[in-house]
Image (tube, rainbow, N blue to C red; front, side, top):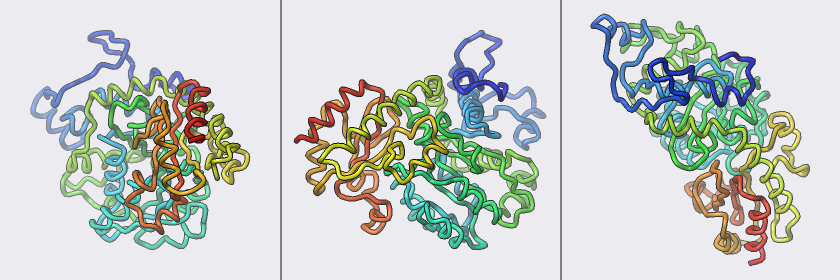
Length: 423
């Protein structure tokens, strides 16, 4: 697909040029485990990576490939790889770059499950993660050692919708030969393409906005083409790999990260996306901009309503003029500030609980990015494993409520919120 096509054209057409056998208009679902080889030599060439082609659905599948190529086009990346969930996409990316003794520097203002994965599970693998205030650029710089392999942040932080200045964070990383990975789940490529602002890798929980209807689990990683060749921080990419007859992945060019991620990490850990879930995610991507446009419009109206309500102490939404992140929102997210943010109910946890239990249209759900508006109480759910200090560092208190705004009639949503706030 031509790069100069508009976003919506790529959203509908990228990655699929038609099926000569059936002339199917929509990308087919290839529900198969394996693929036959033309002959023994053909199989050998595929397994030694000298030719591209389908071997086994754990490694690649035509339906998954349609999705991967479409997201690559939307993010303007080099290549992509789909996973069984957003967490699988993150974890596999981390171990693609790191081994025991290596380090990652991460924003502290991210999803609680990601903090647990990085701070607990990676630690068990002897990969150390240093968490920093994403707004403190000196903290990013000071956390770097000769063991640092990656910077990680969310562009829009979950749950408080803080905006990371990824251009400045990326500049720090690149001065030291370190790639920057950005979680773009909450912004989607429609609102911002982080690769255009200095990121090197973008990861999505496609479970959320990309699929958009709360029906499938999926994750995807987009490679921006970071150069690992002769970089002493990355022996995994520059030393011969014994499992592929001595191949050096850095020699494979701009897509080296995704090539190693697919051929080695996906091969060994097996977190592949089911073709049916890829098929469903493709359907969601086809309406991405329409859904995000409507939900952002709703979110801004709801944020303004909440900001003016006497029972609400603070609203953390960068689209508000009062937000400390409003200037960054206009820079990185000019089409909308996103649809997920938090607000703090005045009083204690019990008052927040009464408010949430009084909602009718809006449901209490541990999910986001759905067409349906949903709320959750981070301190007791998504971030409940965090210590009191970690919660404080993430600016989450007893009265914090996270809302993910959907596409319903905004008058009905505001009415539901108003009724519950009165209770």
